[in-house]
Amino acid sequence: MLKSGTKLFLDDITVEELEKELHVDVSIVPQDGAKLLQSILKG
Image (cartoon, rainbow, N blue to C red; front, side):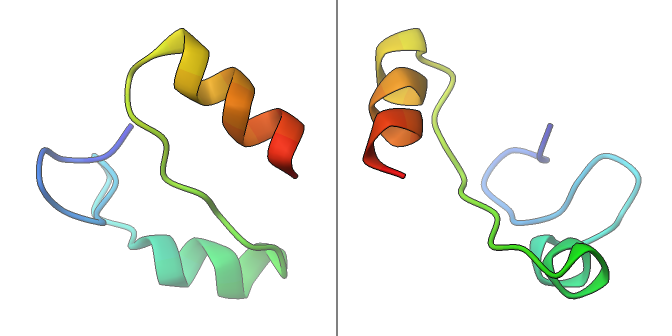
């Protein structure tokens, strides 16, 4: 979960730091089930 209006998680880790640590791309998706499903199916 990100802080509102930022790319910062609640534990103050940035999306970029997470991507670098896990060696994966991170997608930010709104709190909406349909948008989440669309994002997953898009790949």
